[in-house]
Image (tube, rainbow, N blue to C red):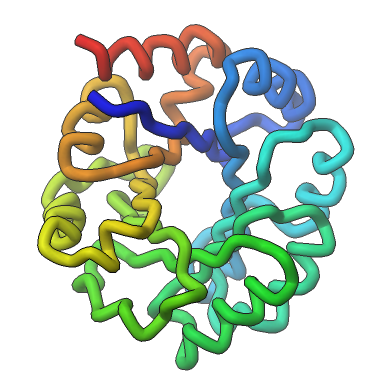
Length: 218
């Protein structure tokens, strides 16, 4: 199976262990650090704010993968990029003019992405070229601390098979990914997985990331 990238979600880290966890993630050679920035309006939770991006930026060279779960996010984009975001994804459902927003991200020097909620059918994205670089497919809803993985949502990834433009994008699956389903996620067509609770389970970050990679080789 082809190699894949891992983007651990820092929303799952106890804040008191943030710097310690960051060092262990570097040791585990993950590909990105994933930040969920929420407004409590677009999504009914609030975990990390923008300050944490700036505070952690001097501590690592890992790319910062910022997922804005924010209604009308355009105003916030310069702040998160100035804080150190390398990649910024906005929600298709939250942007009346997504091409304009993605172009703004690109012009500020970050990689633009679009996130899509489980209930949202995959729209026609071709008009977002040349700005759209990656797509986040959400495979959980914010039901609680143990949001279940929704395998049915992976059917969206199969749509890229007949579309050269969709094949050119990086496909990210975010939500409930662990060693039991990562093979299924990658076979569906994911290039990158966002890993939250599983990555930090039991405080054994290095072990968990190793197990995730091993599950793909089985």
